[in-house]
Length: 121
Image 1 (tube, helix red, strand yellow):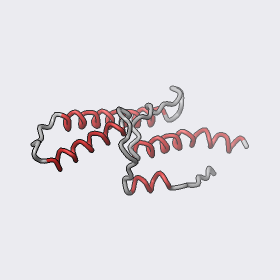
Image 2: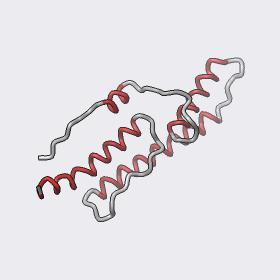
Image 3: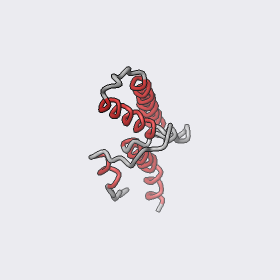
């Protein structure tokens, strides 16, 4: 019993990071930074992951700014529509506005639907 509890204390943070990664992979950038108590054994891993998450989120915000600053030919409706949809999708992923529709991302959708069983032994 004690061994099982200790194993769970060690493995649980990794499972939490995995769940957070799955959300991000599916485009859910609204999640808070991943945090653990400062004295936890995995603080370096968590700090590195949180830095990666914040960096990717910042890059996505900059991509939105770059897309919004594009000067598109008003005659080219197809390009304008594609860019507008891309901006709306990225904003929805970041929680800036509601999602226009439910999106699936190929392999990322498979990741979220995968039901893994874990064994701590």
